[in-house]
Image 1 (cartoon, one colour):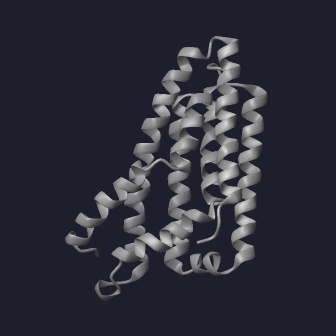
Image 2: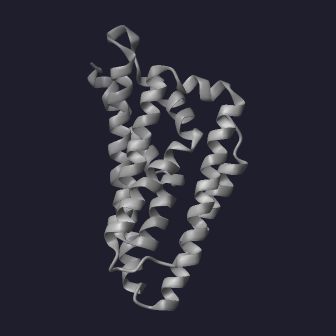
Length: 206
């Protein structure tokens, strides 16, 4: 479906983008710091699923609506801001998650990663700007090409974001038994979520 030369050009570019510090990396870092490595991996999985939803929408042509209708873009953006602020408040109020409750935090982390990604309209604008450069309508239908390239980005992001979250989770695990350190980690992760909310609030539509 996709030419080998195209894949050889796309994969390094996608990996470089995955390694670039951004909202997804910072979210997984904050999640790992607050709730541990398992939650960070779950959050990374949620983000990757959200990315695939954006890719599907872009491939179907629905992403163009977000790019061209200001109120739709802003509505999605402000939902993301509100949700990130909600997460920030929860982290600051509750501190780091206790180690005896990993299952709950893991399921919530997946949901949080998914929602945060889906409510970031910049993701679909990125998909619309980046993936079409590697799509060739002459070799076949556009949607399957979008999905194949999207899977490569999603898998790369899952690995990179998950590894950073595991690192943060290891640091958090060493400190979580200390109530003072747990409170500080809650403030740090809450600050990360709040900073992401501010970043999303002040960004301009491309």
